[in-house]
Image (cartoon, rainbow, N blue to C red; front, top):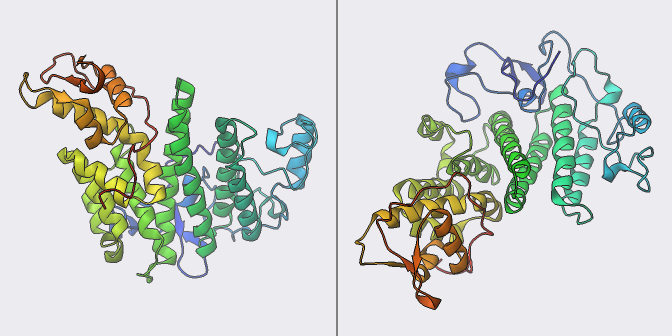
Length: 397
């Protein structure tokens, strides 16, 4: 049976207690789950990892993995025969040879929880080791980043798949999901910087899609494991990531229910500096308060929050140029030097952005500007991504 990623099956959630799963019960969608709107049943980590179990947890006990390696021996042998080894898994660049210390279990779209063997599933300790190994590869400079990303992208989905098959929901599983999300956020930034063609653009979209799914599954796990813990120091930042993703014009969003989502969050999360920052940023974006938008990011964003918003910055800057173009009088030109300070972008990069938006630049040297009310202006469908904020992050605190 085809277990398509993001399948619509929402028939399983997780039990409170010992970290093992139990079937989702009717009525859960009315009470809400994981701090999200209660208009539908919560997606489990199974659906987010690309698994649609053929039986519920009440029909059969959950599997307890016994595989001692990052990749089961049977899969290693098969992939050696088929020469199906990624560059990182080969011994001496030989596509027919790997080792337990190199091979990592691949994600499988078609998998049945009734036929899988315990020896093919990695226990929590091995999944933790696998995740650490994959994160170390993220800094590899031996291959282009899209090659590194493609490998880690697939293998982290396999890690999530093994967690879901075993119905593991505990503090260690949460840490693994948080690390997977860090990988997707760092990739979100690096892929956007290298996004030069349609293939790279599709990688950006798929990466963001998995980031969103991982966040929703993590929120489910927070609800179960941290339900009575109102002083967790990590989860506020992860909730803020979901809000910041709504800056992107091409990101699946919950605009109609975001206020309801806020109302169902724990009070400690809502009052946290991370969530206040994210909500203020989103509000400034919608109100057109671009100076405060960029000043707040420069002064208050955490490293991961900055990585997450960076690919959206030129979209925001283009929208700001639209506001400037519609305001003022034709004789009063907008100097690029002044606008570059407000939008925290190098003047040359701003000039290029103006050109993309159809604005005609006048003047020369240090006095370049554009006149408002230009009818040629249009928001481009595709905008090159910036390299971040052109300002010291210590300024304007």
